[in-house]
Image (cartoon, rainbow, N blue to C red):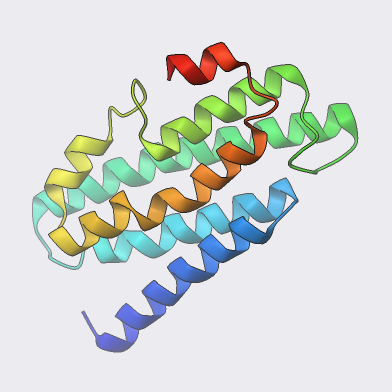
Length: 156
């Protein structure tokens, strides 16, 4: 991969994570998560191997469905409460957002995608996927954890 393209992808990862960490608004947090998702996919496919392409496809489909559910839940919550704030959540949307963020993190039992994706990508990209990519969803999960049912958090 071209060093300039690599630097742009890594900078996009940093920008997406920073945007998510600093936002108090669901739409900006969602945009940051999407920037992260779109920035790591070229890094996953930098070796043109069928396993890497398959891993990137599985990762993209899982993350895209989780992102769609985040956007849906945040929109429904904004419709119900009149606010896009992360800390103002109503009960059914708190559970949905917690489950979806756990799926983005790859926490058990929602980790069905993670082992296959990690096996198909290069080690350096797997390291980024296992560490840096988890910072933004974990922060969002921690921000809404005081609203989430404790039994749900313990179960996961």
